[in-house]
Length: 262
Image (cartoon, rainbow, N blue to C red; front, top):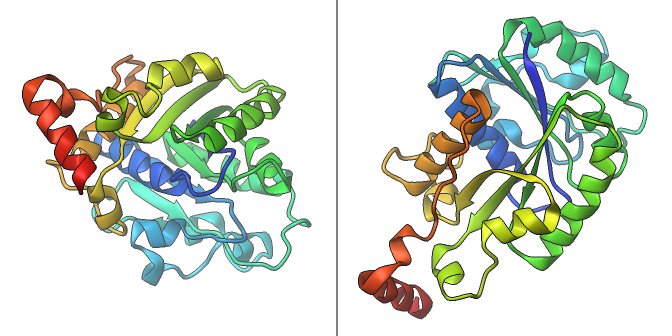
C-alpha cells in the first residue's frame, strides 16, 4: 500500500508544486512506483510542471462526476514508466468537493503505487484541509524568508492537529552565498525555529526554472539535492545537501563576490 504524503506550504510561490514534481521523479529513479495527485482546483498546474499537459484526457473532476475511473485519469510521465500524474480540474468554486471524495480516489489507486504525493493548495483554507485529511504523512515546503517561515509555522500548528505519522521540513531556494555571508538563515536554524525535522535542503538554481516540464540535468546541484531528499524519504537516511560547499574557502569567497555583482 502506498505511503500517502501531502506536500504543503503556508505561503504560495515557495515552489511547492515544483518540489512535488521533482521529488516524485527522484523517488521513481530509485525504483518506486509514484503517483502525483493535484488537489489544487484553482491553479491546477502540476501537469504543466511535469510536461504532460498535452496527454491529459480525464482529470479529478471527471472521476468525481463519474465520467471515468481513477486509473483512466492517470497520466504516465514522458520518461519514467513508474511515475504518473493525476491532474486536477479547474472550477470556480471547489467548496462542494470533500476530503472524503478525494480520499476514496486515493485509496482506489494506492495499491498500485509505493507513494502518492498530494500537491496541496497553499494556505490553510478548505483546500488545505481537504488535502491534508487524505494523507498519513506531510512535507512542509518553506523558503528562508521571514514571510514564508511565519506562514509555515502557522501551517505546522494546524497540520499537527491531524496527527500525521510524520512531518518533514524541506527548505527550498536556499542560497549558499547568502548563508556564508550571514544574509540568509542556515537550514539548521530554520529547523530549530520551526521545531520540525529537516528532511531536505534544495538550492536556488537556474536549472530548476529552465527544466520546467522536463527532467533536471543530472549534473546540476538540484538533481543531487533531490536525489538526497528522495533517499531520506525512501531509505530513512539523514543526509542533507550542503548548499554552501561552493562558497567556502578562498575560491568560494571569489564566487560569492561574483554572485553579488551579477
